[in-house]
Image 1 (cartoon, one colour):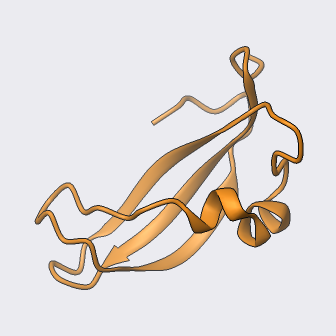
Image 2 (image 1 turned 90 degrees about the vertical axis):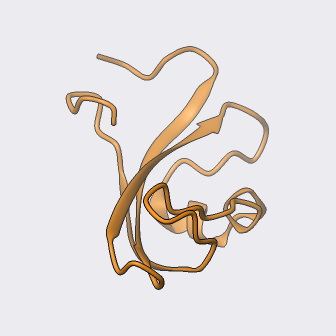
Image 3 (image 1 turned 60 degrees about the horizontal axis):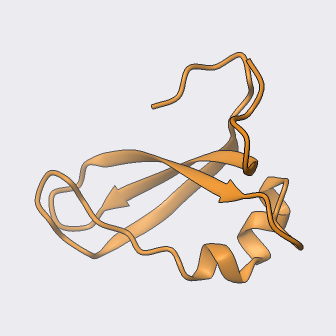
Length: 79
């Protein structure tokens, strides 16, 4: 299953909430625009990623630690 139209890439971003200590995974869709990051290294260095805000769904905290980023593969189901 390919990426939906209008997306350059899709990533799974893994955080650890510093308040409730839960590990949280969020799906991050990158729009298909000029200079859109298409790999993990490009994403981590991008202004697009720097402008993303963390939010814990469990305790509503805005404080978390990034523990990993993985690129979504088309054969995986979206979360």
